[in-house]
Length: 334
Image (cartoon, rainbow, N blue to C red; front, side, top):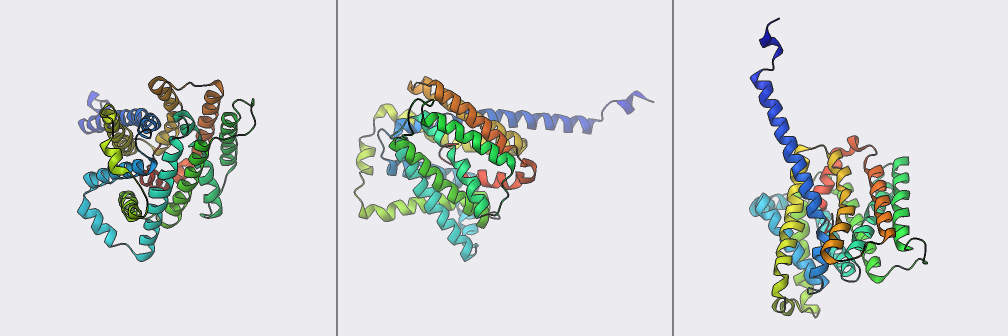
């Protein structure tokens, strides 16, 4: 046997190098995604002190609309939208109202009334609602892993709600708004699963943000909303926070998520994205100075464990569907 028969060919070397570069890019993007996702609640919390929930909704959806247009082109997206069938357009309109209007408004309302840490923790109730709705309305099978993971997540949330079982159940107003927001997001997620599973994710993003912005201007004449005065009174010291929220918490988060899905298995992205629950708590603690109580840390650990159990169940079979759902969903908090 000659030495040349044992050594890898130049083509094999190039393919191996390409795979290595792809994995490096994928893991780097996933790391950036986790770090960017950790900032969302904290930067949003700062901005809700100046902008009202309705103003935050407008700013957030404008940023996402710009991201969609710059990434995929405004004219091609409009052409795709005009080619859709009436029932698809109706579903896109529903998603725009629910996931682009109602749910973000409730989320920002809750964020302005509770801590960034609680926002991140109670934000995980969406997974529970989504499993329930998927079972009842999308006819998806709930496995033992789903039930077990749901119980673990619920236990983590219960520990946080009861503050380590030292108090009776008493959610504050902000926590209730966050849970209602997750309920709304899960309704929209069920519509995506059932009605829009064949629709391009970027088209769902575009339609959602455009509908939310249009809805804002339609209701503006009938409500007293001081958006202009809020913009005029916006503190100069918060401009870096606004830019950071737009670039890091919105654009960089979604962009790095796209990149990680291109180069890594969705299983890796899914499971490791649960780390955001913990890193967001740490960021809120060091950046905003919010205390992390032992019951919040314990609740976060249980929530992450439950999410891993849920997302690892039958993930290979659901990879294509989960990728589509996450890319079109892009909730305010990851």
